[in-house]
Length: 474
Image 1 (cartoon, rainbow, N blue to C red):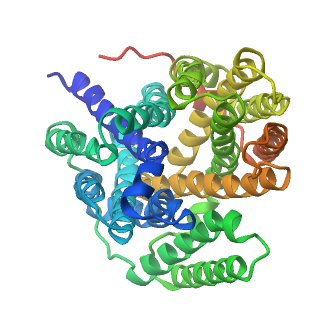
Image 2: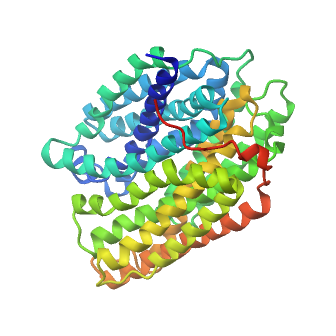
């Protein structure tokens, strides 16, 4: 295998990692009712099959990125897959609520090591050639919507024709393949000398986990409840302690001055708002298809395919050409604005609507916006950091997107419920609630476009002209 071909095979494995991390958040949806019956979940606790993964994943991403810098991205990539494998086996074998939730948290730990190390390896493989880097980021980014849609399909297929434990066991052969292939495909370098900031790692992980916990619980217990604000207050206090520790340490977990790097903070803010807009739209579109239009799991998943295909084409084909011609700032702003238009259009859904009129056109516009904004904001966030801090930058941008997604989904869930989305069986009320959530998500995307326009620095023609001319794979 030639070195050039080997790099693209390595990219395939990195994209598979992104695919799996996202698929593990969506594949369990259809299986939840059977898991509830078999394991004895209460209605209040059932959502934690999803949330346990998200809290561990979001809380540990920053630490995972630093570990990647200190001990080597390839080593952390392999370790993450092994942890994900163990968590998946235990989740499938679980015979109680406690074991199931613990196993899902272990899966989240594995994902928190895989995600930042995968992006670091991508930068190591393609960072020296800007046009190849954007092509690689495009393929990596396209794996996320593919994983989300595949999770819906596979979850329904496995639950209906096999049994719910196999939504976890499906990870096992893929993890084994990844562990075996990594030494042959991935570069061995990337480790750096330094100490691990244990106190910083504990406080930031606890602070981020508490913040994500409060956000995902808020729609259930109420945004005005004492629990929500106490946990959020604790999260803020822990993160303040973390910042104080970082300011005083010679070798901190996160160099605070990294945010003075041009465009790094602005690009991460764009990722926060992109996740905060996109994930609620995808979530409530699924609910509209099933609860209002009456689609079952498979037709609902099929209804998302045109959107998924357009995102993949947009990220792989359109975004690289557009970035090369107009620059990453212009495309981030344009993509967020187009996303806002698409979601505003989706807010016109009707109780007696249909897929061809109410869903397809608007969802394709939203998908186009997502595909144009994601790659330039992601690439800017990662490439702005020093090479030796690639893992940290990857952890920060992954954290930004995940926390933005959790915050946006929690906020739009509250908005939807306040407009009637909690009235199951009442199609007009459900439609009003979902419409309100689409409008709210559109407002988040529009805010992202405005802030990106104000905060992102425009790169020079020399910096962008060489980026992202289409590069053949092979």
